[in-house]
Image (tube, rainbow, N blue to C red):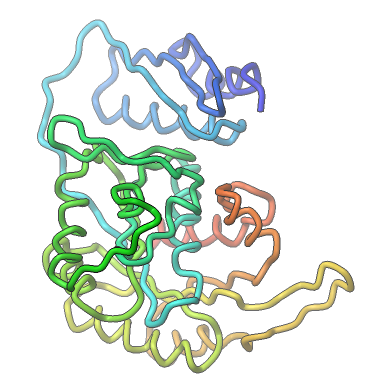
Length: 321
């Protein structure tokens, strides 16, 4: 990671509007002039510059906007939320959520990642952000990493203590993270849902009204039975199901190069066809994906993350972003 390389990348993205590029502890800082640009164009340029810096190696990006004259502030539009769900735990839903969010941000979109799994928050580990979120003017400030804004119960509570709350308390916490979070203007919020079909899912569907949902499953019948229930729940509450993702679809041996299918293969594709929903792709069981995730470096930004980037393209097409 090199400040000169990052500087060259962001100047290629925005020309002379970029100045003062710095790099410290993986965070790139820069000044971006938006003078003469409409609000939407300025936001698009900022996302483009942030994406360029991330692709050049920056872990986070801090952008200071300057202009000789600005526009009057306007009320933020309602957040567009995409629910990433599963019928059961252990299928890699959080890994898919985090990498989908990072891949979308790398494509120049303004992305938030909400860790809605109140009892088992994984996002701080997946993004390598063990710190605590702060309050600013009675708003929760999401943490930033890899070009996205993220908020998790793991950023608000002691990581060594269990969250022992009844359903209504957990649902209330979820709603507050969305409505009281200082998210700014996003193109999309990716919500990593807890497994199952309980109170939190109903709160998300009925009060926060996602624009769509995707369901993650492994290929085995045991997981697909629960994935079917998750799809049925979203249909009952009127949330469009964008499709199914098959995770841990196969394993390529790093020693012999042979491919094995420890959980079967193609079950989610068959289930999608049977239920009349799109099949959004298959993701392998890969040691490098596991190692990168444990290290807090989303594999969507690495060479082996092509399946996550393909998924991001399909989600963009489905939501017409």
